[in-house]
Length: 454
Image (cartoon, rainbow, N blue to C red; front, side):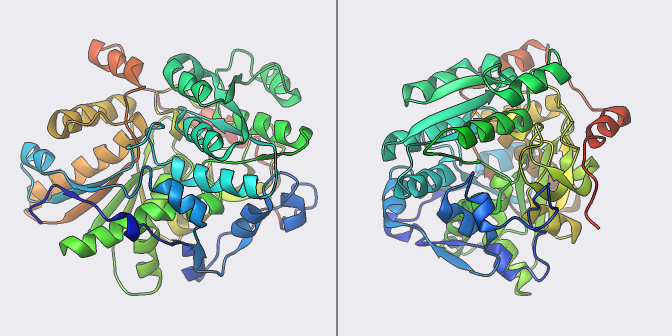
């Protein structure tokens, strides 16, 4: 346990994804067709999604899904990612806790998003499609999608949340460099974009808006399908490679986490990190504490309602049962753009409702204070999204300092913040502000939720 970094070999990259839904006694609620209020069929979903991804989305029973060899070969360009012992952070905090992080920023997109982008683009290519459409918040998913599309040879159309398009121009240019067409959302190029602009004049967008535009684009373009970087079951499946590698690395060093923490927006990072560990809990083999850390400006877990809701602001997607702030909720343009989604993964929502996951919400300034502490200790500039998990890990480590307990803390460092320097500039200059939505803001967002199924 004296080493700082634990790497697996290329041959130890997992050969299969792990589907934790297979071990859940109570399965996530199914997606519903908003017109019929009946579970979506594979045929209905195939209009928007790739056929293989539809199978994965609906499969609650298959525990392990083979990773295609072409995808594993591509993974070798940036995986396996290291499990890092944050010894300098431990020393700075004066804590008896052992702190580890799984570092997913070692690729040009700067985040874990490439794990699912590679798989989804591969399946689209295998189906013989021309291209894919999607949305992106802070730009990590869009960058990853552009990279994967360039590798597998597909067209890529990305709708980027307008506030992030303005705040993070360099991520936009990464996407364009890899060949993606990037449009700020909401735009005037789609019917749903124009509708959102009429209803919310002056809005700087949200992931829900961008999803609507990307879905419309896919539905109206021959040979294109929509892909999503978070929330869906298929995405959590692909991201399980994070947790599987972490689990194996802990076996190698002879240690094991007590507390596992991930930032949460739609759920891809947290879901991927906790997957094999949650599987042990669901099978009655082990106990862990799981904590989702979210922004106080978009608190889906901590202040949302567990309801069926549209995943998009334009109300053209299926209904998902999730912790939601309402599809009409417009989050403030904070710098954690990847966490600015009104809802949460149905899988994680079910686990949270069962009390198997805890959640905390943080204001923007305190998150950047934690990011600064981490950067000065470990020499890595973290993404604003990841910094929510860092804040929670620091809080837990300080509790150990008070109690004297030697707990083991694992958090997901889902990405780097080198394209987020506008945010760091505001923090360092003292001009960063915090925003917490009031009850009226939440009530307005939830007023857009459709009638619930009987």
